[in-house]
Image (tube, rainbow, N blue to C red; front, side, top):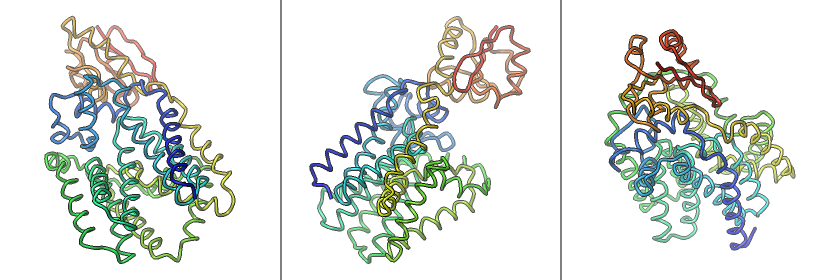
Amino acid sequence: MAVPQRSTALGTVAAFVTAAAYLPGSGRAFDYDGSVTVANFVRTKSLLDPFRRQVVFNNHPAFSFIEHVVYSVTGSTSSWAMRVLPIGAAAACVGLLVCVVARRLGPAIGVTAGALLATNPVFLETAREVRGYSLVCLCGLAATVLLLDLERSSSRAKSIGYVAALTLGLATHLYTALVLLGHVTWLWTRRRISSKWRTRWLVVTVLGLTVYLGILAMMVDAARGRVFRPEFPTMLAGELLGRQPVAVAITAAGVAVALWRYRTRRETRSLAALYVAGVVLLWLLAPRDLFPRFFVWSVPAVALAAAVGLTSIRLRALVLVAALVALLPSLHGYRSDLMINRVAAPYVKSVQARGGNACGIGFATETLPAYVDGVHPVARADQLGGCAISVAVLPKVDAALVAVAERVYPHRRWLRARIPGVLFWR
């Protein structure tokens, strides 16, 4: 085990290294979800808008509120300003994991776990966009650490911290409820549920769910039916373990060894049963919006289990291989724009300044408003006649309308991004 000062220093270094690695490219254009977040919940008139607006399930209310505070204070929704919070939360999450694990299990396991977490593709990619997933991950980890500390010695400060962390996570994303269920299961298995814990969980539930009252009806209306995805369990496992086959194999081996090592503990069996059953239930219920990133809060636990398992069989050196293999594909387009929404905005503003109508073809209507107002939606070919300029950010997705625009407009220009887009104007 590392002494507290050394483990804190190690965690601090890990946090700074993670932030330094994640920050390059922070000025690139928002992706689709980030654009919707900024346009609808952040770059708005009222701080209360995050609690009364919803677009399908893109709003992470507490996260959107904090970002709105950033916008209100700085007056900026630049890509850099909006990415400070998610990248900062991710860096803090890696630092906290390294610090806590180093203190309790030793610095080698702490660094190993931190490396697997920081290079995990679903963690890295969501943390570098304007989304609340890294904040959920940090809140879940912090609450779990405080849970373990409260078991050893209770204090008012720890109790408040636990409630605050879990409430913030739940108010950001409803899947934090699975973290709460894990805590209930942990203490129930250990026969340590008390009135204090029931009170804490009640406060978390009431406060965390209250933020959804203003958008509940919109969320219910946005339920778009069922889509059963046979591959979802396999896809989820792959994402949590590192996505790339070599990384998945190494990480899975470490997790399997750790689970086998602790197989006789009731806590291990209970938590494994809870989360396997939870994933299977959601898989069978088959909501249309069910994605592996909703489970990003579990990546620190996966990283820790893999680190413990690989260390116990003296294969910790393989972590470097797993981390590099998982990281390298994520570096493609690390600093480049995904879509043309930002680079198209000046063209749109120029046409608007001359009194012309600007239109968005398909998804452009949802992504351009993060940078420019007054973009009219085009869903049918006959609507193109009233548009002086039209933008397609995903030409292949909106291929039918793009084909019509090519015949209707005398001018067009392709703009570069990882997904090239096209402008049409008269």
